[in-house]
Amino acid sequence: MTTPALRALVVFGSICVGFAAAQGAAQDKRCGEVVTLTGHNNAKLPYSYSAPENAKAVLILLPGGPGFADLGADGCARKLTGNSLVRTRELFHAQGFATALADAPTNYRGEDGLGGFRISPLHADDIGKIIAEIRRRTKLPVWLVGTSRGSISAVNAASRLQGEQAPDGLVITSPVTAGRVGGRKEWVAQTVFSVNLAAIKIPVLVVAHASDTCIRTPPALAPTILARTNGAREQAVTVKSGTIQRGAVSVDACEGKSPHGFIGQEQEVTDGIVRFINGGSY
Figure 1 (cartoon, rainbow, N blue to C red):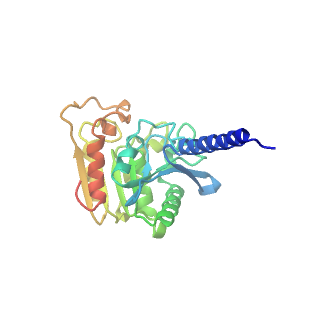
Figure 2: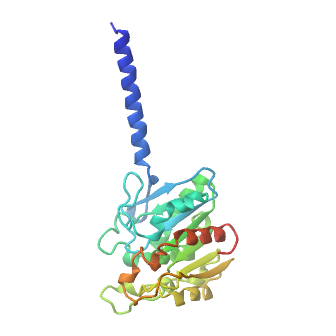
Figure 3: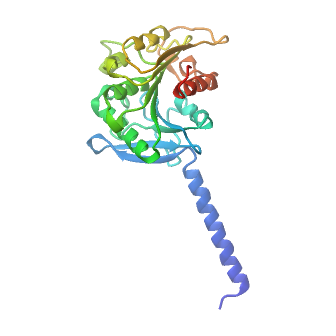
């Protein structure tokens, strides 16, 4: 026979278990819902999706470096945390945009990460699968936003994809425009100019920083990208800072928490990107 005290204890215990489960679920999605698709050669293709209420568009974020964000169960990146797109997700959410942080497929997580795969048709098709799945699920416009080496992935996808897999617009920041031919790794020669930019006919925004001294992303070359694209709307912007002095050109300057990653000007850059996506000028 169950006593009133025992019944109360059971109910209280159920409430505690329910609260703990709800709290655990909330923690599991702290940075977004992890969605895993099947990519090329049956590789797993994960991304972290997060959306504010009444989102107006979805931005697929393609980080630079090796492209391996190492998403946790909570949707947060455990690598590339200094990357500008990883750092500014919440700024896009605050302005009504959903984000999907794309991780590297499971067969490209070694030392080089995506490496030379960034210009592959298979890589473009993987991104296309993410675009199509998000578009079917949300019925929203989908834009590609790539930074640094992620810009190569972005233009590769934008130049190849068609139909439901094609993005509605393209934003590239600190784009890789200078490669190294004859280097120890052949893929280091790849730049945004390694793909057919003339096939890109969607709106295109290019953003560079005047004080960026990353050897692969000279800001003077960024605007020349638009001489090769055929975007429906196009704009090239060079961000300046009155407090950051231009240093020496190096590989070390390619880090995210530097002018290369618009450090200290994240809100300004996010605002400009949002204005362009909304149909205006940066």
